[in-house]
Amino acid sequence: MIYKKLKQEEIELPLFQGFHRHQVVTQCWRKESGKWQLKDIPFVDEWTKEQYAFLVKCLKNTVNTGGAVFGAFTEERLVGFTSVENSFFGSEKQYLQLSCIHVSEESRGNGIGKQLFSYAVEAARELGAQKLYISAHSAKESQAFYHVLGCVEAKEYNRELTEAEPCDCQLEFVL
Image (cartoon, rainbow, N blue to C red; front, side, top):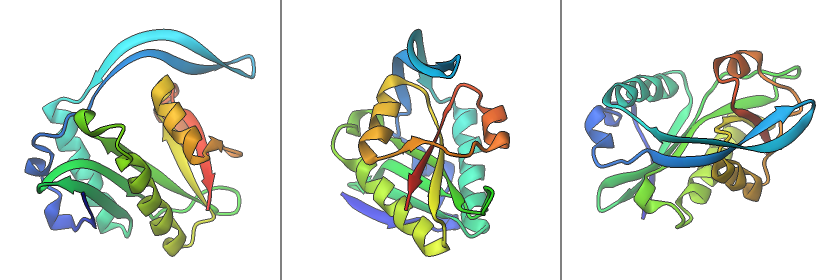
C-alpha cells in the first residue's frame, strides 16, 4: 500500500475509476430527546458519476485553499482517500474539518481507513488545529469506525454542516 499527498493536478475523474463507494446500511444512529438511539433505517449508499464529478471539484478546492488530500494506492489504483480543509471554525477557532474519508468497498477492513485518518490528524496538526471536526455518516459501521479511533460527539456543533447533513453525527477528535 502506498500513501501519498495528492496534488491538485492529480485529482481528476479517472483517479476514481475502479473506486467503489458502496455501502449497504441497515441501521443508523439518531439523537432523539437528547439520547442516541440505533434505528432500523435500511438503504444503499452508492455514488453516481455526477457525485464523483462533484467530489473532484471539492477535493481540488481543498488543495487550492491550503487543505490536504491523501490517497491510498494499491498497484497504482486509488483504494482510499481523506481530506482536511484549511478553514478554522469554533468558538476558539479550534476546529478544522475532516471533510472526507472513504475506502473502496473491496478494500475495507484492512486498516487503510485508520492509516488515512492518521495522515489527516497529522495534516490538521501541521495547519495548527486543536481538533478535527467530522460531520460523519450515521451508519452503525461508520460510527463504530470513528469511535474506535477515539472520536467523540463534538462539544460545539458547526451549524452549516449540521444543516447541510441533518442526519450526520457531529464528531470531534482532539489532536
